[in-house]
Length: 169
Image (cartoon, rainbow, N blue to C red; front, top):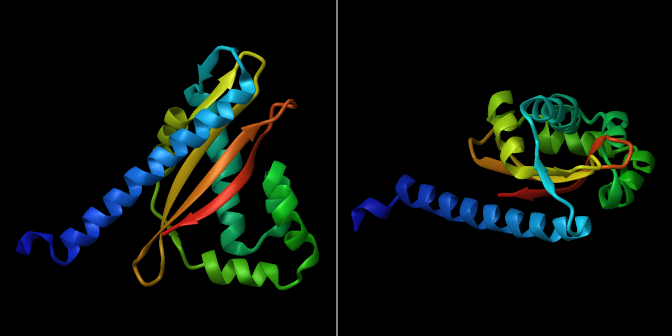
């Protein structure tokens, strides 16, 4: 089977990983939704999807790329604020680490693609709390793909925040 060599095999591996990641996100989202009990879940409308992407997701990625710890602190909450917050506040070398790890990566997803992903992967309740997960695709300088999975919560004050981050290769 010569067809499954080289780039075709690499593509199939990436596709398989993508399917597994999508399944994991859906399972995680379902677990998160148990918090809402029997409340009716509502879809995120286009305006809110645009707001999430423009005010949280893209600024978060940009802050990772530039090592902007103040912006990161403003955009995180929950478990991520506990685990990452100390590094952001106390480690003087962390901004350099972020710039080295993410600075030369190129965002592959356009704003409209990210908005579609948010519309498909986020929900909220009638009392305006919400959850969602988003995979952001980036190209590294060596042309390999880096996927960053971000989990979001909409808190009681109505602000969407990043509550978890995982690098998926």
